Length: 197
Image 1 (cartoon, rainbow, N blue to C red):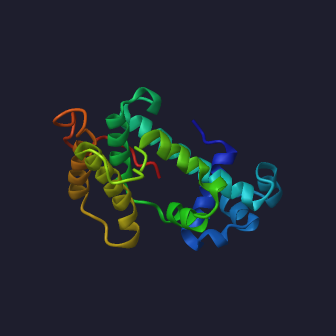
Image 2 (cartoon, rainbow, N blue to C red; image 1 turned 135 degrees about the vertical axis):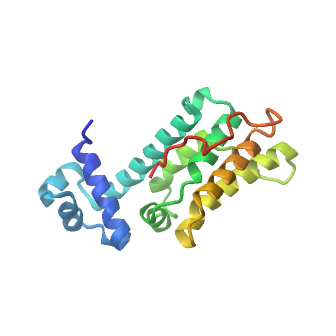
């Protein structure tokens, strides 16, 4: 199915961010990247801020889709361990420069981060408010933090070999299942998660 014009514009805007950062996102730059007029762009996004908010929503929807595919079901039908295992598998794909720059640029804007916060609330355990948690909960917290770190690290350093990335993803999946079963099901290969970016 052909992507909608709105999706094409958002993908073009992500390309602009990849090349020049968030500050490079102007109506002129995005219109040129999308192969349309500035007026056509304004029809879909009345302000730059509306476009940036739509970019966060667009990326968060891609994550939601990838997480649902990795779990084989939507978040509300998955167990805590299944949700975290899916997150660990999907987050082991490195961040794109556009994703990282968007998040850094708007880290202090709760409205911009609302789509991401929704995904995290559905798919990851909440961060504990104190250290008094069970060993299983600690293992799950470590799995979540390691997945976050793996998502980030390749944007800053040398990429890991794909087989090492798969091993780490499988180990994090095992940690995710710590409180439910002795070992995680289906931890061979790469987990089959699609890169959401």
